[in-house]
Image (cartoon, rainbow, N blue to C red; front, side, top):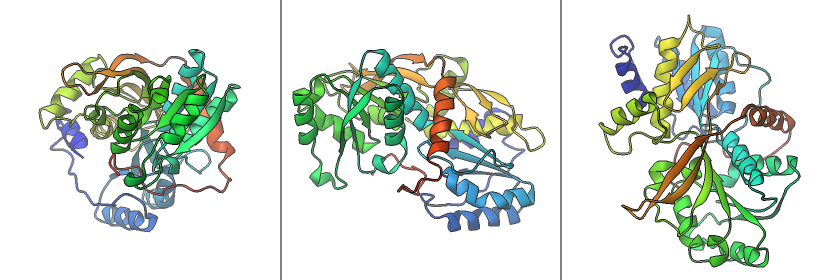
Length: 356
């Protein structure tokens, strides 16, 4: 919300747009989201911005189609949409979590890795990043030879089985999918096992989210990641965003305020209610709203998670934009289509929180 408000103000639109808000919790109940959107539209809202998953967006979309109003969906990219083509009145601004997962697999393979162990939290296992990791690995002729999921209860957290596997399979690299305090749990415990700390490690998305890396004690080894954004991206747009948000409160420049800031940029550029084909210059680079899909296409970055010598915690270094990303984007779209009619379990919430 702060990213949206401050973004509009910076663009000189703060007085031209009235912002009203309503809570949809963790966006896990479509009926509640529908009721909230309906009430906002009845109260005269022209644009509704919601952090929700694409399945919920499809559920509420008839409200916008019938009213001629616009829905802007903010999401993590850890869900897959189930609709064909494009929702006429909905646009998606995503952190591209699954695309980041595909990108880091490509980096690992480019570095000569072909045999992987995969580890994630119980929480992360309920989203699509594990599938994105697995299918990207399979498509390139590599294998995930071992899968490891940590228990739901923190008191039962253990990496002993993973450590034993890596001890017996020293050629394997490690793919990881954790978020928030679960990332902290993982790297704290991983540092206790030589077989894990000596293993080439790759992660993506929320696993390398900067506000949490700043809290995590450096585990004693660097690891590679792919991310949607970093405060260290060198551009005028990013510098302005980070400076503006950090002047409000430390750590206010993060991936969530970024989504709000980008929403303000898109609203400012909106042409008669349509965002089709619009390009904005975001803190993470140029975002293109694909008129055929309704999804914004944004850069993804590689980085190294290293030690912050001042604090002893983790930080991002060597940030470089991923090139030739269209191939990964197209493959991800095919992955989404391939399992569209497959019965599977998933969390319903919008991955709204970085703490368990």
